[in-house]
Image (cartoon, rainbow, N blue to C red; front, side):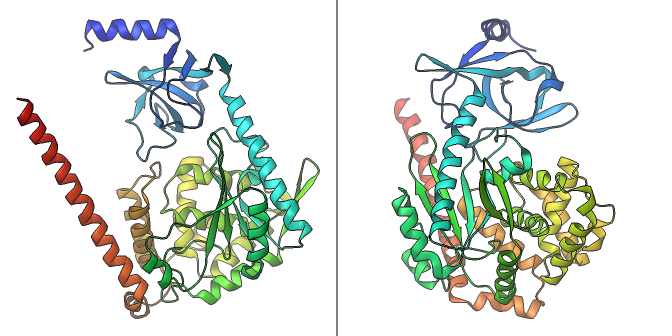
Length: 436
């Protein structure tokens, strides 16, 4: 039962229809000490990506809705790794409709529009320069694809856009991006790891901005393996990845937005790539499936049979069954995406790999996000178990110098964190004893 003080606080907050934000969990949409105004809404009027105020114990949280169930919501701060406790109808205080910042009032959608405008301008300038230099490219994901398939601006934080290019064009691309104000982000785990990397997979460039920094990931191949390790023929043949890249370039589609043309993947290739992208992130971060859901829903009725046949054939040809299976399970469960009736059975992975995927989902949450160490460790485990290679070949991956190094580095990182945690705990205990 709530205390009388809590009840008075609840009443005061609800009557004022505004509350002050503290922290950076929703940056850059909400800033520290922004005042947000909210209105009472019914449960049915709340949608995914709405920002709502929730009462949790004796605290008020202003976070984003990332999933809606029958009688509950799941919310999460944009910059938080973990989701908030399950939100019931009675704990919803209201939906944010206005933000006061530096004595000015903003609507959340205005901030999303500002973000989209900046991203759209940055992407278009980059593509214009690539066209002028006659550099072949394919947009893999990002704002342009969202605008085309969803027909609306994204109502959430957008972090980057991805472009597939040829490695031989990288020098030209780097010059273009630096001229546009980007700087190269070089963040290897260590100099030794960088020296052991046997092939470049992707490079990230950042265009700094206090509110909406722009990141572009330059891919030299379809990325779903481990970018920090490089070539892993023991788990998946590099020849398949090279051939996949050729297919992506060969069957590009051209879309037009605001009278400007952009090159993207064909529908069947885009479906497979986005499913692989979700696998690459260990099947976590449910927002990563929003675009895939939109792409599937936009397939023209008269092209459905051809596109789904091509999709299944592509999955078979490149032995991707076990990698994409989890993505389509998640789509069907949380988005009710209209997949063909026999689609899942048409490329079902081997029994043990299928069992592994279902076991994995029971022990992890698609709503969370992880740190770099945990994400990399889990991806290697998933690749090992879901690889189409025979066991004897897979085991040989542990003989690669960079894999040996990464295993040792992971052990060192875990031990170091444990020791630091113990030191902090002892330090706090000592301070308590001294103060007594």
